[in-house]
Amino acid sequence: MLLDQPAFQSRLLDWYDRHQRDLPWRKTPAGQPPDPYAILVSEAMLQQTQVATVLGYYTRFLDRFPTVQSLADADLNEVLRFWQGLGYYTRARNLHRAAQIIVRDRAGVFPDTVETLLALPGVGRYTAGAIASIAFGIPAPIVDGNVARILIRLDAIKTSPRTKSTLDRLWVRAAELVPRERPGDFNSAMMELGATVCTPRSPDCPACPVADHCAARAAGIQDRLPAPKRAKVPPLEKRTVHCVEHRGQFLIERRPDTGRWAGLWQFPTREAGQGFPVRGVRLWMFLADFTHALTHRRYRFMVFKGSLDVLPDPLPAGLPSSHGQGVPSAQPLPAPPAPCTQPLPAPSASDSQTPPERDTPSVPVSRGRPAPVPAAQAANPIPFPHETRWVSLADLGEYPMSRPHQRIAELLLAHAPRQESPPGV
Image (tube, rainbow, N blue to C red; front, side, top):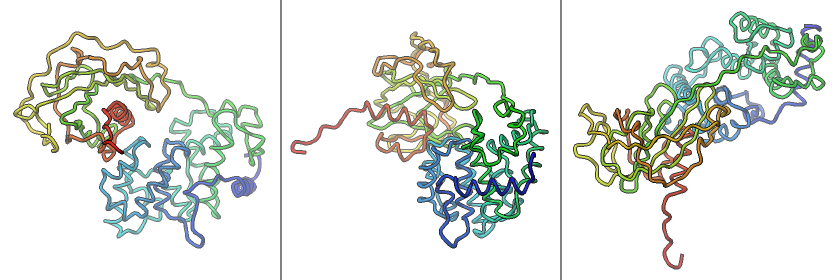
């Protein structure tokens, strides 16, 4: 650094006291210490998610689960429902498991050291340091994207922060800087500075309270650090979604407990080329075609709607009777629907240009057009996963779904027949 360390700490904390944003997880009732449980919830939500997105979810989540005991006692399905829309659902599952461990193994006493915090599911070095410093006043370092960017510019580090050697160097530097007095505020100030002033592009150096300490600014290279990573086009995976209606209810299935969108509910979804494992579905209608982009992967969903007047006898593996829950079985599946020669619409240019975390139509949506499932979708049916249900559109909100299937539910609701009001209403 260009100036002494105490001056850096003092200037940063003075700036933070004047300019920190009014965020709900920073509020502590007068005379009470920070709540480590609330900090854990906020840190879990803020992982790979913007502050503006988290704001509404955080308050609603803590209103429903105000204590670690209440979260431990809750059903996972309800926890996922309150997390619905935040994405990265493994965070919610780990948060639920961590609460259960604290209640079961520690009699509800929250871990108060970095080492014991690291033993909780989903708690890594950064989260453990944040909780230890903010809730318990321990001078533990933190390094997230914001802090890493500050440290790289501070010392003009030209190597990539994604390499182990550079990351180790950043943790050492963070440990050197964190003070014994107000370590939690210092760590929060570093995150605040990175989020609002020392931003990835066009850092606002004139507004930075520690600009005089920055070696990158002194060399005029702050705009070029950290070293950029090569942009990669995420792969596109195609899925066919079958929205099957029977007596006013739609079939949904629960995803496996591992993998992407683990444990969430969805309309039966298969890879392109795998069919719907129940015969007798009539009037397949094309409903929508859109692309959903994640950070490292994109999905193209072809959505079809069909009706099933009579359930097959015997029921296929995992298919529930009306108003019931399916139980997976080993009995053979019936033959797939008769093939159709209609091809899939060609992907549009947007398929290769979709930004992360967005839904975009792949082709103009022509809802209600008769379109039996294409031949590629009618072959190789696979059975249902762990659990299936018949659910009315009105009750779909009780089942946590990923954003693509929330969108499909919204489409079904928007085009559902409207009930006529009785005379005089």
